[in-house]
Each structure stands twice: as C-alpha cells, then as structure tokens.
Image 1 (cartoon, rainbow over the protein chains, first blue to last red):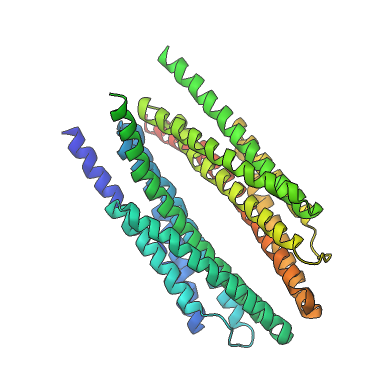
Image 2: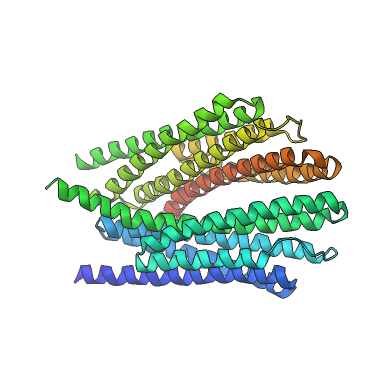
Length: 223
Length: 223
C-alpha cells in the first residue's frame, strides 16, 4: 500500500507543477500583452500574480522535499522529484522576468510612444510555446518534445540578436528615441531569458528521462 | 558506522563541488582576461576548459543522485545534496557564459580595436568575487555571506545597465563603431548573467540553511 500512496503523491506533485507552470505561463503572456497593448492594468496583474507564484513555489518545494525525505524513491522517481525542484526554480524566475517586462512597460508608458522595429508579438508567442512544450514534455515524459524546446531556444536567440541589431540601428538613425529603443532592448532580453528558462526545464526533463535510462542500461549490462 | 561513512561522502561531495567551482571561476577569469588582453590563446583555453567542466558536472550529479538514492538523508543533509545539484547546474552555465565571452573576444579580434566606455575589468572582478563568496558560503554554511552575494548582484546589474547606456551613446555619436559596441554589450550581458548564476547559488545556500532552520524550529514548537 505505501508504494501506491507514493505514486499518488507523485501524481499530486505533477498536478502542482502543472498549476505552477500555468501561473508562470499566464505571467509571461500577460506581461507581453501589457507591453504590446500599453496596458497599465495588466502590468499590475502581473505583479500581483508574482505573489501567487512565490507561494506556489514554496508549497511545491516543501512537498518535493517531504517526498524525498519520507520515501526512498527509486532512480527514476528520484530524478523526477529533483527535476521538479529545479523546474520549480526556473518557473519562479520566469515570473521574475515577467515582472521585469511589466516594469519596462510602466516606464514605456511614461514616455512618448514610438513604433519599434521588433516583432515582440512573435517573440512572445515563440517563448510562450516553449514553456507550454517544456511542461508538456515533463508531464508526458517526452524527451523528444523536450529536445524540440531546446531547438526553439535558438530561434528566440536569433530574434533577440536581430532585435538588438535593429534597435541599435534605430538609435543611430533616430537618437531622439534612444530611451524607447533601450526599453525595447530590455524587453527583448527578458523574453530571451524566459526562453532560456524554458530550455533549462527541457534539459531537466531530458536528464530525468535519459539519465534514468542510462543508469538502467548500466545496471543491466552489469548483471 | 554507515552514518560516519555517509558524512564522509558528504564531505567528498563538498570537495567535488569546490573543484567544479574552481573550474568555473577559472573559466570566467580567463574569459575576462582574454577579452581585456585580446588574447586568442586564452579564448582557446576557455573552450577546452568547458569540456572539463561538463565532465565534472556529470560526475558530481551522479554522486549526488547516488547519495540521495542509497542513503536516507535527514532534512538538512537532504537540502544540502539538492542544493549541490542545483548549484552544479549554475556552475555549468557559468562555464557556458564564459565560452560566450570567449566567442565574442574572437569576433572582436577580427575587427578594428576601439576603446569602449565600459570598465570590464571592474565588472569581471565583481562577478568573480560573487562566485568566490557564493561558494565560500556553501562551504561554511554561511547564510549571511550568501546574502551579501545577492546584494552584490545589484551592483553588477547597475554596471550592466550603465554599460548598455554608455554603449548606446557611443553608437549614436560614433556609428562607425557599432559592431565593437555591440560586442561589448554582449560581453557585459554575459557577465551580468554569470553574476545572476552566482546569485542563484547564494539563494540555494540560503534555502539549504534557513529552510532547514525553519523546519527545525517547526518541529521544536510542535513537541
């Protein structure tokens, strides 16, 4: 019976990390919308949301540590629980970067609006898709989906480099809009960091699944 | 006897994370020196060093997981081992960012040299000190030292913002040096990320120590 109970707790841990991921995802999407639509209300929402994320993070961490200390999880379960702890940290940092975007939006609202030569909607969409896929790969234990997240990270890196380059050109040709360009540059950078965290999550998923596989193969070959 | 053996293994884990930290620290310092001194040879060293870091990371992770699965570590030991796993990931990413600086240095060597309005030596020194203090706080279990690392992160953030702003001014006034400025901008960003990873390490140390403290206090008050 205790093994069954343990499996239930693992399932509960999965549910909790899914809920945490939903909060982080919502934070990113709201922050990008706030920036695109110049929406002060959404900025405030992102900052309130951060409190919920921090609370969820603590609860999730507590539960994962409880499971590690009370049970004797086998290799694959052990790797899963540690992956959840690491992923939890990345999700919390995604929340932090979303707040950074909301802050930049507030700054942007205080100065004249200028159209920037950056497709923030596409960047936001790509980043958001990475988080979704990363968390899906965790839920399904799908290392190939996790691989694809890491490939998407290259795309966001390219978008960020392009944004940097185009914003620098803008600063050269329209120096009067340096502040707005600078703002866009920081938003782009935050999105790229969020993508990095999604990529970290994917890496943890791969390590959880393939690390366990490797260990399994090792113990078989030693039999 | 098994408890004593376990304590020996924990001590060994500490030694290993110290060795890993030394490699990462060396990577940062060599990368900064390579950039400051425009030294192609040092760039190559940083890239070779990365292989050693990746190997050390895998070994350390394996050992930590072995300890988690074979032993039943108590709360504070459990938190220490998980902290080591998380810190290990940050150290490996510090190695990645050092390689990024080395790549930027190689790019900078291919174009005309221009003096940039950024004190990269100071930024590198501050970042390096953060890593040193973060790892010292782990070795000594010193949460106050870890707190100070997080405060230093604000300083590197300020330096990075200042560098961004000054490099943008440079692009406006000397557009012919945009490429060099862009390069400096990316180096500054990598240093800031390295500082972030040092700050993450400090956060894990605090969680390890204070998290355990809180739990200890809780169980005492429930007695």
